[in-house]
Length: 585
Image (tube, rainbow, N blue to C red; front, side, top):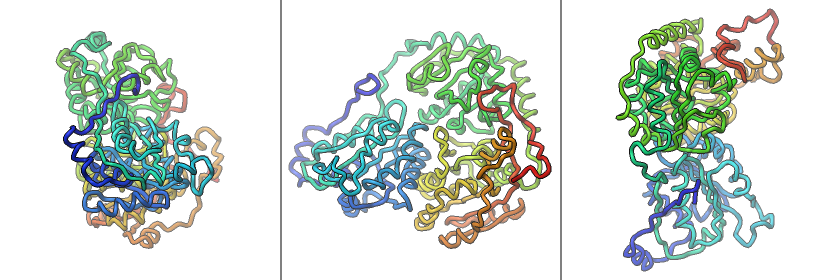
């Protein structure tokens, strides 16, 4: 049982089982590889070690059917599997050894959990008789990861392996997606049994007849009575492959669409109804339109604190309709007036035929005014984060995948990059993981089968996991790594500037790292840009291998607009902080 619903597995037919029993017995490690292949896995990421040697030997034997990418660190491997899943719409798989190998996965697993990414992590451990005895590199990874996975398993009998792996893939993809961990002691990997293939069903949703879904009729009535409708689209729209339905809904009822960070690619940024991200650092037009609407249709969002601010003011004057596959999200942060549980694609497919066209010219005129005010907020200067990101956007194809780390550059990318296709923006939204970007970009590059992939990062974030540049070079990946280099931990410094009287404690880095020389030492191309002309020249001649572009900008650039934490749109900051003489430390 999972979330109160039965999870069914699909064993092979009787004849297949009989044939299986006639085959030579397989080791647990061989069963793992066979099951991964059976579930459509062609690429896994990981790092070998003593407790997973049998698995790596099985990988060696199956090299023609499944690829393995070795990263520089297990955290990088977990982020690569995550990026592979987000960009490709498939389940990511990562393998690590016991002890520190397993614990190095934790940040990546938590990142996937907070952003609802389907991931299967396979770890080795000490043999079953030694569990709990502090054997070499033994750790209770199941206990450690319990709060940050949908489910985890310890497989103590090789006969349970096939079923467990199928179950893991099913759970990772059923309902609200997320990570699952399978811990396999070394003696279970070495033990043998007759292999019976088992596959899982990806969906757990019981079919609902059109018009019978709870809350649907009430939601349709509210939407049809709206004078100022607004759609707030989240990552659930992308996960449900419901982007087409979202666009049809917006066009039918002439509702502007604002996005959560995870939902940003659910609609092309060039669409006239797409206003950009809402929330603390969201676009001016999107955040104000959401505040002024009378009916908000929230699709696949979780109403995080960065999106809502002051909740009583956030809810004021509007009917909130919340549609989400995870019933636990209803009322967790914001209590909706109408709640609908279910797969978004299914819900919108049921809803669309029951709606009629809505057009309120006064509301549409108001939106044009908000967009004009938003356009006035352009950053001033020839080489600003905005000009850097927009220039990169001019040279990239529509389907280029963009990854980021976390910080100011992440928010600037959200604000200024012209996203036009779904699954082209990879970022750590819920956990806010600095160092996520390099691994994610590597995984995305594999998912896109070698297309140019861009990583926007800051000098602080890049320092977290720059060792994965070794992976990118070894795999000869066409990664374009753009360092928005301001010499500081920009987002933390911005908060110190705004809320801590300019006491810049440990955020001015004063590092002497030469990123161009660093890139060359790893075997990548490295260039430094100080103006748009230099950047354009570099982008017009990109290699089909990793390149690091060090773009040096002013440390005083801010991410605006900004709503201070816990406050509302009335408190939005839109004007750059006026530095006092000698204000920087």
